[in-house]
Image 1 (cartoon, rainbow, N blue to C red):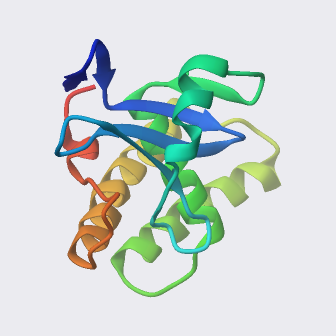
Image 2 (image 1 turned 180 degrees about the horizontal axis):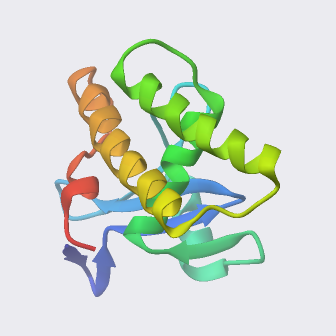
Amino acid sequence: MSQVRGLVLPRFFSYYDSPLKLVETTDGGVAGWRLSKDTGGWNAANNLINKVLFVGGDEVSQISREEFIQLTEHDRGRYLRGEGAIFALYETVRAIEETLGRERRYPTLEEQALIRGIRRRTFVMFEEQLQQAGDPGADPTIGTAAS
């Protein structure tokens, strides 16, 4: 965790049900990154820093690192399609969720743990691919750091 002028970073938010993270820049400043539901990568969102830190509102809430990972992977699994290991894991989660919907029931503790575990894994995998592709907002360490 980094600290910028009294602000502990990184910080994680749900902004209109979209994952948003605030991180420290190399020069000691703050950068905002919001998930792109089109690509699964990160769009610069510096224009939202003051809003989430100082203004707030009903559609802005600070969330934990784990909630951020789960929300990010929920959205990636829902909005993206493709081939490979990550998308096979997204399909596994989707199949569990579809079964729950058909059976009109809540997930068991085991199903909840399985979904959370898959999403933690896909978060790191996806972030590593983004980082290799040069996405400046990618950070797989968020998924491996202690909460």
